[in-house]
Every structure is written in structure tokens, then in C-alpha cells.
Length: 480
Image (tube, rainbow, N blue to C red; front, side, top):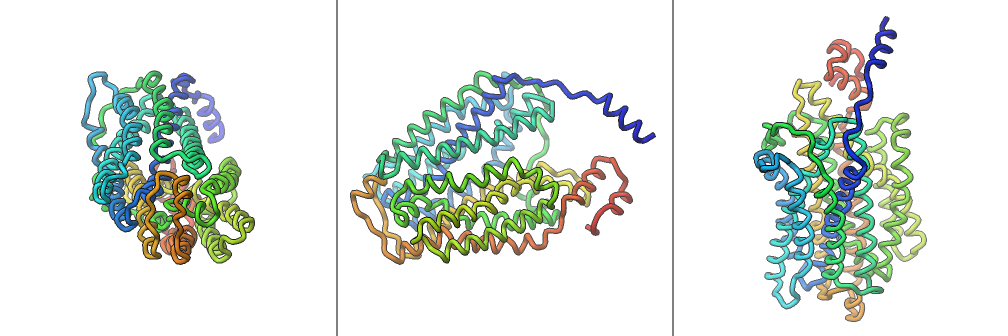
């Protein structure tokens, strides 16, 4: 009887209709390209730019801590504003997105226009003001663009597909920016950072415009009454130990991923050319491109967190080998980095998939579905890890880094600014050993994370009302 009932249910359920047009979806994905390009221009190149305009590393790092802390909390502030502001059009997301297609490019350009004649203090002030303006503009785009998809369609399958493809477009924008900007500012081409930011910002505008024209908010909803304050996030963390354990490890490893802050200088000073980083970017991306389509198949046979834990352990081992072998043998270094990128690719692919698991656990234990707070914590943690940039600079400053004042790597090359052997050793340590230490420390809280895929599935069934508490408890592999 049960089988017959299931078959009848499957027959009755029809796939919901597609609500969006191809042009509408393409305009949505295009916005992610521009947004990601601006983010990469700031996240991937701003530290290098600041290190080349004649400012002491410690001062740069201190200023970055200030702006990164603002970066970590302003989502919560805008979340309240986003809920309360009402536009005459009745639209919730599109008005904000139309503002940002102007604000994001302009603030991106502004932050790279620091006049060379200014004092160090004035340059720092320009940077702080510019970054806060840019980050505010970016925040005005982030919540609306993710909210827009819920206004475009109520079809969950269609919605998930749109978001998944948007992630691919965002990665494409980041890759293009990393490659293009590196080539342009390298000593071979000789563009200044200001010129490069101007060109990237032009592309950003062109890719963001379509959603302002083609985007549609056909679903109208009432504003959410839920507010996710910082205090509420802390309270939820204390009540959900697996969310706390996971994001403790995530933050520890993330804030010590210091290699990105100095990548171009590693390429220039240790491997002879800033262009070397483009080669490593491509080679390091290959394992991730191979792993991503296979990850679902892999997870059918291996528990997700177990795979994640051992990928972190493998990154520690391979990263330590990279550090110990050094950079003198370039071919061996390339091979080792490719090997190291395999566990890193696994970590990057699945590291943000544990929040829904912790949400299911939290609801199973308390009866409260607090997914909004949990995802706010995820966003906060992701932004908090951007402190890796100033931390990297603080560490490098301990090795006597010589301050640079040059508009481009071409000018740097003509000026023949050399670094001491101690500074180069600090560069290598910051790029290779510090991330290994961070990941090794993250394994400590990860070790106590005992939530597994099979138990999460049981909890999800109970939370959805498909099974009773007794049936759930009997099916779990352990007592939670």
C-alpha cells in the first residue's frame, strides 16, 4: 500500500513552471561577473597597491584592520535598512542594484587614485575613506542581488539553478580580473594600478547594466520582521556547538591565509616576474575545475565532513613540504603547488556547505529554525577572514621589509629596489608557512565536530515532520 501511495503522489506532483526568461537570467548572471571583478580588484590587488605607494607596512596593516572590521559588521546594519526601506515602485532589490552599478565602479576607481604627493597619514586617510565608501557600495549590492532571485521565481529548482550558475559567473569574473590585472600591472606591460582600476571598472559597469534593464521582481513579499543583530548571532553560536566548532576552525584558518596579500611580490622578488603569478593561478585552478563536477559523486561514497577534515590535513602536509623545499627549484615548486591545490580545491568547494547541516542540528535540538541567523554568521565569518591581509603585512613587517614607492612593477624594476635576505625569507614564510600553521590550528576545533551526513539527513526528516522523534533517535548513529 505504501508503495502504491508513493507512486500516486509522484504522479500527482508536477514540475513547477519556469518563471524567468533566458535574457533575464543572463542579466542576473552578468551582474555577478561585474560584482566579482570589483571585489577581486580590491581583495586581490589593493594590498599590493598600498605596499607600493610609500607607506610603512605597519601603518597599512593598522588601517586595514579598521576597514576590515567595518567590512565584517556592515552587512547587519544594511540588513536592517534593507528590511525597512520601501520604494515607490514596490521593488525591493532593483533600486539598490541600479544605484550600485554607478557606486561600485566609481568607488573602485577612487580608491586607486591616491596622489603620490600626499603624506603617509593623508594617504592612509584617503585609503580608509575610499575603502569604507567602496565596501558600503558593495554591501548595497550583495543583499539585494541574492534577494532578487527570490523575487524572480518561486520555483525552487529554477532558483537553485540560477544561483548555482551565478557562482560560476562570479568565479569567471574573479579569474578574468586576476589574470588581466596581473598582466597589466606587471613589469612587461607597465600599467599603473590607477589605469588598471579604470579599465576594470569600465567592464564592471558594462556587465552590471543588463540587470537594471532586464531584471524583474514579479514576486511581492512582506518585509521580514526578523533582525539579525550581532548579539543574536553570538547567542545562537553558543546554543549550536557544531556551528561554533566549524566557524571557529574556519576563522582560524581564514585569518592566517596570508599568501594572497603578498602574492605579486612573491612572484616578482622570488620568481623574477609578477607574471609568474598568472601561471600559478591557471595551474592551481586546474584541480578545482576537475574536482567541482565530480564532488557530488565523491560525496556519495565519503562523508562530507570527513573529506573536509582530511583535505585540511593534506593541505597542512603538502603546504609544509612546499615551505621546506623552498623556491630555488622552480619546476619542483610548480609541481608541489599543483599537488597542494588538490586538497585546497576540496576545501574551497565544500567549506560553506556545513551551515545548512548545523541549521538542521540546531532545529533538531531546540525546535527553532534559525537559518537566517546561521547564514548571517556565515557571512560575518567570511568577511572576518579578510583580516588575513593586514595580518600578513604585520608579519612581513617583522622581517624588515623595505618600503616601496612606485606606481607600477615596471617603475619598480627601473628603480632597482631590492629587499634584504631577511625580508625575502619573511616573504616566503608569510606566503607558505603561516597558512599551514592556521590550517593546522583549525584542525583542533574540527576534531570535535561529530555531525555526519547520514545523521543530518535523519534530523532533516524529523524537522520536516516526516518521521517521529523516536524514529529519529533510533536511526541516529549517536546521541546528540
